[in-house]
Structures are given as C-alpha cells and as structure tokens.
Length: 538
Image (cartoon, rainbow, N blue to C red; front, top):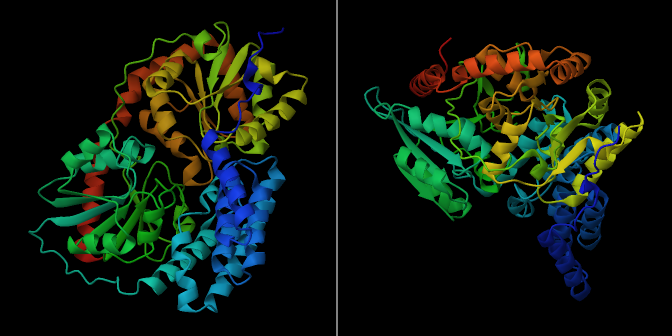
C-alpha cells in the first residue's frame, strides 16, 4: 500500500549561525592564513555540523602552524568522536582513535612545562568526549584517563584550591553547594535537581546554588526561592573559586560534569572536602576530585560499582522527587504534524546520537508486522548534516526489505513544549532507545499513559526507563532481548485491546513515580552521614 509522501527529505540549508561561523572563519584565514586558533575554532564548528573529517583536518592545519601546540593536540583528541554514526564500524574506529590520542596527549602533558599546560585550561569544556557514553560500552578506563588529564591541568594552574573546611557540629546545618549551569527548563533540572532542592529539610541543610549559566526562565525563580543563597555569574574561574570557598561548603554537588564548560573546569578542582556528581552525567566522571556518584537502586545493575571511579551511592528507587509537568496542550491534530489518522504512531523522540546503527533494522521489522504505522523522530537541533546522516542510515535499513522510508518515518523539527506534549497525547506507543534510555522523555510519555517499550541495558544509562516502569509496576513492556523488544512493539501495534489495557494500568499506577519522599530521606541520610562521619555508614 502507498501512503501520501512526506517531504522530510527536502532538507533546508544548514542552520544559519553555523554556516555563517564557518564562512567567517574561512574568510578570516584568507587574511591571516597562519592563525592556529582560527583553525581550531573552525574544527569545532565542523564537528558540531557532523563534518568530522573536516574537523580533524582543521586540527592538523593548526598543528602544521604550531607543531608544539598542546591545545591543538587536545582538540584533535576530543574531536575524534562523531555525534551521529554512519555505520557501526565508525563508532569502533573512532573509539580506538580517541583512546590512542588520549594516551598520547597524557604522555605529552607529563613532559610539558607548567606554562605550556596552562594554555589548556581554556580548552577544557570547550571540546569534550561527551559523545563517548552513547557508544554503548564500559567507559570507566577512558573516563579515568580523561579525568586524570583535566585534573592535572587544573591543579597545575590552580594549586591553591584545596580547602580544609571544619566539620559542622551536629547541631549546625550542613552547607550543601550545588554547582550547576542549568537552573532553568532543562532535563537535569526537571528530573533531579528541582525535586531535591525543593524537599530537603531547611533546618538540617543550608543550600547554596552557584549558577554557571546565563539562561533564565520561570524555573530560575523557583531555584532562587528554594535556595538559602543563589549566586549568579558571569565570573571567572578564580572568582567562582573564591565565591564558593567563602560560603564554606561541607559538600558540593555537581549535577552534571559533561555539558557546561565551567562545571567541568570547577569539578576538576577541590573546592569542598566532599564532592559528588549525579546521573545527570549518565557515566562516571573519571575525576579524582569527585568522591561520590549519586544514583538510584532501580537503575543500577548489581555490579555497578565496577563502572565508576567514584564511590557509588544507591539512593532509594530512582533517586528523584519528580512531579509531572503542567502544560496546556497545543491545539494540533495529527495531520498538522505530518501524521496519518489511520497509522499506529510510535514516538522515537530521543536525540539522534542515542540511536546506534546496529539497531536501525528494528524499525522496518516493526513495519513488516504492523503495516500502517509511522515513527516520529526529531531532527538534530543545530545540524541538518547530522539529520541527513541519520536519515540515510534508516533509508538503507528500509530499502533492504523493499520499504519506502517516506511512508513510515517523520523527521519532526523542534516543537514548543505545548506542541511536544500534544504529540505525546496524539501518539500510541513510545519506543525507548537501546543502550542509552530515555529519562525526561519517558517520564513525560507516562504523563499521557503511553506504553513504553524498553530493554534493560548493561549500564545505568540503558536502564532508566526500565527502572521507571519497575517503580510503577508496569513491566510487561520491558524486553529481555532485541527480538523480544520488536515483538512487544509489534503486539502493541497490532493488538489494540492489549495496548488499551497497558494504557489503563499506566494511568492507574503512574502516581507511584511522583513525589517520592523515600529518595529525599535517603539523600538526607547520605549527606548527614558522609559529612559528619567522613564516610557512608555500612
């Protein structure tokens, strides 16, 4: 059967700012052809657009101009990891290349002078191995190398930050600092940080927020209202160190240490006696300066301790105090979003880098069983090149079984919150990404009682949706294998009666994931025990 064609393959030009940036750098190089810094800026721009080969070539040009440049070597190391893979082999070769470059860079820095090393401070957080964790492997050794590297750089430049803050008396509140770049409408804020700071006991804890970002919205005001003190930037690294130290924090929490440049830099220093990160980062930080990794019992495998350089702390359940969003839905219908009224709609709304090539075959397999269905993906937010790479991959998978991708796949541009939530309301089934599961997207799909098809992963980052479904007691859509995942997706698509039964159970049980005070009690116990006793009680 032929369906009306959707013109998502007619891509618009690259996002204007990215194109202008590359054009500006290229023009600048015609005036100053021997400027290594411009080549490095060009390398980063190319990488963000998915032009990995051009990015590495630009790093090589910078090294030709300045052969001893540690910064150019740092960029070339971090930019080895593509954002979206063309095929599975690319993820393996890029991982090997990154590993080799990281070891070489570490050896080079060991022999470098403090003055040469100081030139790398600005590079930390400008380019990072952020996309490493989405390859689906155990990253502890690579992260350990990376963590030692950036800690050495920061310690060389800022050796004075090793404070000795006295323990509080048992009658005094504990000073908890939260160093965070996203005190606004952001997934880590919505899922983890917001609930923690709104519920921690103010008699026992003084909460200090250090806002490293400049974006503000109504959520920023909520943060201000729930913190003892809210410190905003912009400030230099030195100024942030002084501001944080002046508040005498007994413990610092970095909710994520992979997205915000200043958070990465500061977390590699010792600004409090006890420092923690959370699963907002998904993977071990590798940093010797981070002591604890705060996670949840429902999302960690039994042997998870072997996957972290930090000491793993398993807070109760998911570790989060989450409340569902209150959003007025946009007045859209399926046809407004390129969806057929007759089709079974599967939401696949993770960032494109969460979808690995080895699982592309899943989607045409579902079509073969279900027939009239559509998969909704979101285009990459900043790069049409990356969207094209992903679409071309899917085209190969659909063509291999003589299916036309345009009949079944909708590449949706970014939507407003109201439109996104309406899309969830209009859809039938939520397909979780394998290897790196959804978190915010899963919780928001549950708001609309969507059946969640997921599979328990090997690492925490692949187990979040599984943990959410375990907490609400709706486990029949948790797959035990890829084939089982496909079969569950197929059954939900074909068997309307079963799908409605699952939806009904979601509606009846979803309250169990909201307002979980057990995690708050567990967090309070951890904070008190670790600060007063310098260790977690057995």
